[in-house]
Length: 293
Figure 1: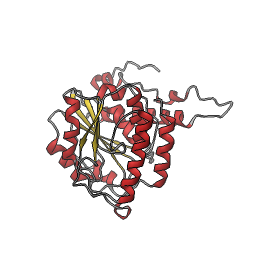
Figure 2: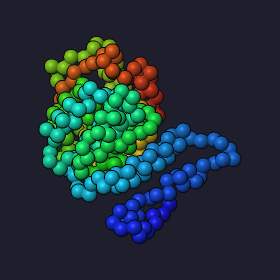
Figure 3: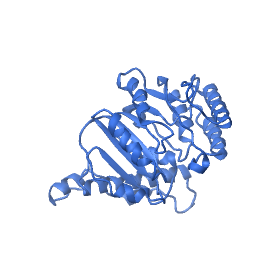
Figure 4: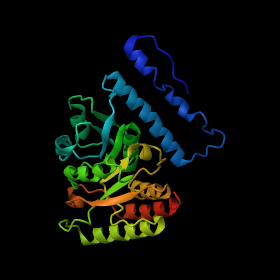
């Protein structure tokens, strides 16, 4: 794929830096055998959506050009009630040189309309998807759009306080780690459902056995990574399998991982919690699949 020079003024000059031949991501699709690797196809779809979203940012003249210390990736699906508070809290506690990348994964509860009505800001980008692909896929899209020296993840449901994310980010900013996990189980004040805690503990123990890490909470949402390091990792998982996948691949690359406490307020399925037992089974599959990175 090649970029094309355009002669229609400053906007054309900016668009010329883009790879605009998005349909050609399917050039090597084997139409004779019709046998397609699902992971490869999803990656190509994500790549095409990435180009479209970037073109939209440029067309709206919202493409940020500054260097950011921190990028916070916020995947969101049907969190209309909690998302405004999450974004407000991030604005309050994050360092000045922070960009926020929100990925709306085809919400159906009014989240999309609310995000479209937000005032445009140079340090905030909102990417919209027409179909739901899952949290892992949304995070991967956010990572590809990130520019920060540190990339952190914040869920939109307020189970995790955005104020605690700064504690997770800080060791990476100071160069003390390649990745920092905010552990819910290093803070004695956190109250979690027994079965949920047992399941997380079991998954973390298995992950530790396969990766050689000594984590207490592999499945935590609050994670921060050195930006260049994270962007160099090829990620595939579309749903909650992202957590064991990134953990295994960071460990396989010899990344230095530490944990810090983070507060956690558990919610029930009647309040919108989405992860279930099928995701635990998927996590086990991912741990085995990525055990060598």
